[in-house]
Length: 246
Image (cartoon, helix red, strand yellow):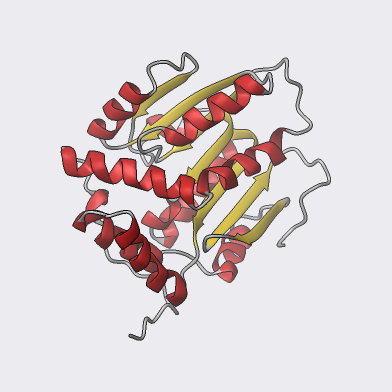
């Protein structure tokens, strides 16, 4: 079957409905987290954070915001990493779905440095939120180009250390392989449909480079990573490590 990935799809995903709730959504959130762990997605985001904080003092608290936090799995990974490596993290999960936020709070109740807020990231309240690092894992592809540019401009203005984007490569091979993932993880119909749509809403590297140019970013890197992901790191405080456009 031929899959045309030349242009980004603008088809909506079921999970884009912020009123969605119930066991089907809970199962989808857990499966997304499990797949992310299995395919190394959490590790990819963590490595991005490590790149940004390697020259920062461990005595200063670092505020990290996770946009589209899902069930909070990435924040729990960061909390455990910070505790093990003597970093002081203040971790905030943002999601527009109230059911998702309450579920993330339930799963994270043993982590005192994690909090969650139900917010629409295009509202004024989010635009006023300040942080050191902002994460966007498998979230950016949900938006159209003008929304991405607006959101990234807010990220760039409100972060002091940097931005870590971890998102999908738009690829026919990835589309076909995801169908195998659906079988292996016994994904429900919503997760299957949304996963395939997500890939078609993913990115080509040149599109991320174009975003970087339009945003006039000075210090960033874009790298392809397994499994069909792009890691896009923007560093606000130049350390000399990142190389533009790579």
